[in-house]
Amino acid sequence: MKKSAFTLIAASALAVASIALSSCAASGEKKPLDPNFTGGSGIHDILGGNEKTGGLTYSGGALTSATDKNITSAEIAAGTYRISSGAFKDCKKLASVVIPDSVVIIDDNAFENCVSLKSITLPDNVEVIGKDAFKGCDDELFRTSGGVKYLGDWAVEATNKSISSAQIKDGTEGIAAGAFISCTSLSSVTIPDSVENIGKYAFYNCNNDLYEISGGLKYVDGWLTDVDNLRSSVANVKLDARGIAAGAFAFSDKLASISISPSVKVIGAQALSGASASDVFIAYGIEKIGALAFENCKSIENLTIRDTVTEIGYGAFNNCSALSEIEIPSSVTKIAANAFKGCNENLFVKENDLVYVDEWLVGTENMLLRNIDIYDETRGIANGVFAGCEALESIKLHARVKSVGDNAFENCRSLTEISLPEGITYLGERAFAGCVSLRTAKLPDSLTEIKPYSFAKCGAMYFVDFGDELKTIGDNAFENCRSLISIDMPKVESIGANAFADCKNLLEIRFNGTTEEYLAVNVARGAYSSTKLSSITCTDGKAAI
Image 1 (tube, helix red, strand yellow):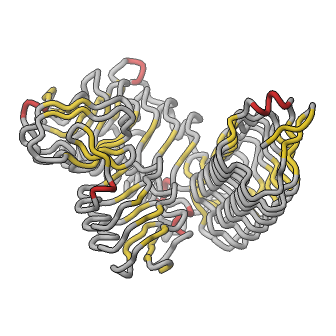
Image 2 (cartoon, one colour):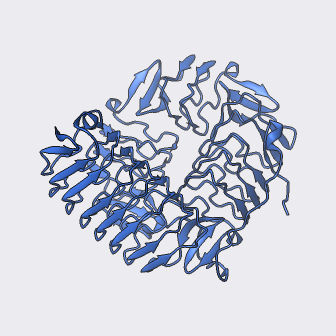
Image 3 (cartoon, one colour):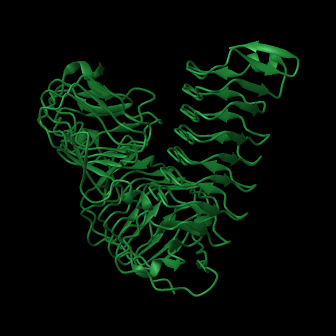
């Protein structure tokens, strides 16, 4: 039975009806969960404990500190999800940093006072940049436009506190925490539709003319940023709201329910972090639940997610310690690592050392498993579940599986072959990267895209069977697969940068189309670098590379 003290409801009537909770009925006996299981996807075992490598210290998938403050360059380990607060603070000789695509969160003060830092690339997956994360870094690191400093696709800071207006550039993906804090003259901000995440306190203590107050809630250019003297236990987000900024309800300890408009497509990172809640209904129209969106909502007990949601972000329900029931709709194609870490043990079902939430495989309690046959009703494998399971030799995936997450089998060094069943539509980044014993891979016709690094560094792979409907081969997808000699390639539309780079024995690619059709393929620079290829064999002759 639902305990309806906190409900996320679409303002339109079609979102009001409740959906019955489906159970994760694994075949056989449902064993109680090991009380030591934290609910995280297996990624925490890639960099588990307190591991030191390359002058950096990791714990539980997070980079916690640079052990040497005189470090001049850093390459953060693949699989890292978080750069912790102050991790590189006062590393004054640090000039360059390589951040892997797995990083989602860059915490407060992470690179503060790195006065020599001139080179860093933010991955597309970053959803949180904390307050003063890059304060005091070299000016060459930033681009400045209209009184705003940018790092990559993020607005990170106002150039001065006296700024009176700001127009955030089109294409900007996020606004860092505290970016415009205490800009007391700031009375006008234009935020483009490209922005998905706005950090905590981004517009705190600005000119009162900047804010629109409606129903006890404070908005900046349509984004809900804060609660302003909310007298009721019910918050009605206005119908044309564009998004919810991080921490908007963090201190609303008396909030009982929130009515949210379908105009909000993304519940941004940390959006409802710490809000008082006991039951949540994700509104119709919402497409993504961002990183740490409901972190520390410790009273949530039941959760129904509408079937417009496609992605559940990193740590989305982290430490929701009362959460014991959930329905994940078939629309969801991606669940990030640690999405349910620290949730109530009754949320999880265990069978044969595998841990499930609803019909998603989210973790394993045994990193020494050799052979795996997953529950036959499983619809998806969350990010990083088996990453670093070095003893794993084989896995059987059933026909209902639609999604294999990022890093899902990364560094499974004993895995020798994989056959993905027909019906899989999502194969994540680095899904099988570093599987050094993997010899063959069979991909289904339903898979139209191979994500970046999906099979990178699979040194033993000599055969890959592409599905006929494949359209995209991502950057570095087969980089350093040195046993590949020949490939039969369907009529793809694009081949990413370094897709087959360092496949040193690759002699032939047979393209299932004419030379004219191959020449129309978008082939990025370096796609075939350091191979033995001199041309592409097409159905009517050779095409130059």
